[in-house]
Image 1: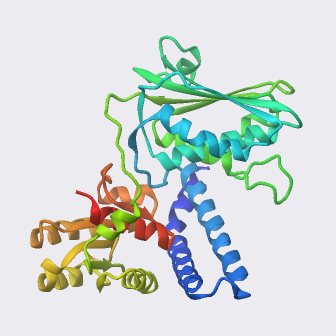
Image 2 (image 1 turned 90 degrees about the vertical axis):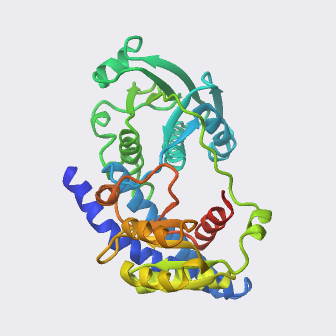
Length: 375
């Protein structure tokens, strides 16, 4: 399993770059093709296939604990409450969803997107385990290693307070011969084409990557309980609102954006996207060319969008050079590499502007607008 994780991390960069090129070009074509055109269905199918492929890479990286994450201080009960309506739509009407959140003031440090994936995967598995009527319950509570025997067994070195999220179902339970394998990648009891076997392995890897623990209690015919434990932190909640229409309109008119990317196809897609949005775009394929370009146009460049790993000087070191030329310049980083590779270039700060490849044009532009309109 460790070798599989290394393999996933090794192919992630090249595979994500290929997916980014396909996704970007597909979206550019979709944007200029009338909705009534027969080819729209084919383009939509391509787009969905790209998203599914990207999700599988993310799941493999999550299992291997190599997925790039950006933990933020969040109110866990509040985050769960926001998910409630979405989960309700994913669960059949004949299954009741019981919610008991008991930690309204508790803060944890998690990547919000990863946390949503974790809870959603567990709830969908619970749904699939219920044949006919039943219930899924989710509750939160505060525990310590001294007060929780289960945490003592699985986290002997843990100290301090943990928030426990318990997701329980009244389904069929997990057979004894299956239980030891539930977190293994590609292991699934579902029929061919009904599951990749990556759901629980992704959950396991993501929980571990956030310094958490996961346990399973199950009995055939009597349901299953998954317990998630995450350390409580003494920090304030980090918030970041999505850009509104007003914020987009407030973005500097014809703002200069420098794009630095060594993959020519992806460089072209980002430049076209920004030009179509009305930005004044500069481009370079390496850090040295970007710095030379910035010397000539330093005051015209408001934002630099750069791959982290470039031939020669890396994107992080380049940003430090560029900031000396223009102290007000803002930065946004992109990458298709795994977390352990990125770690060689320094730990990404919690507040860094980062987006993983492949990314949609909409998400890319949303982050650009957010950065340009932020203090």
